[in-house]
Length: 188
Image (cartoon, rainbow, N blue to C red; front, top):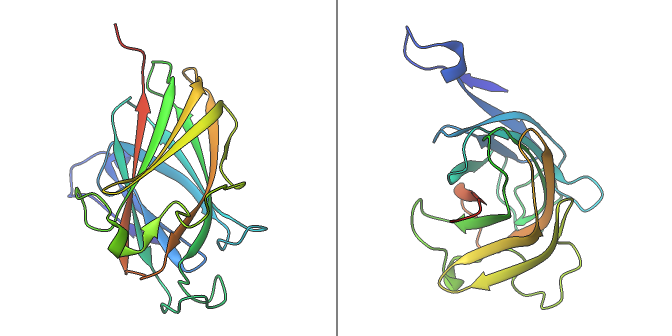
């Protein structure tokens, strides 16, 4: 595990950790949240598990990098193979209840993922059975020009943790890509 530190004089809370597991590393370097753990290799039986704490109800971006050679359909853990079973465990430390939670994949930061980049929430599978949340009953997936996964019909109270499971596929693997996480609060 590599450690990137902030400039001298900043509090230890400002430190950014890069967590390596399987064939990938995960970073909270873009701010707004904190990774507290990472494990797994990315298979269905041993998913990549990222544990996080979100301190606000605003979108945050997880930076994902390959740490091992890219080989499409290579052995998970030894290669970045484009098939990543994920579980994200998120502590709501925002002080507000979340009534939805959205994930968005981006190959280029701040640009929607498009069909040609090969990155998606298992877009080829029309009836996925690997999308689940501990706190939300339903989900919607949107493709083109975005790759978004919205969990709805549920709630995450402050200081409670929600788990999200899904499959990310990247059939034209890149060295770096992003997962935007957007907790939604009630309006009005």
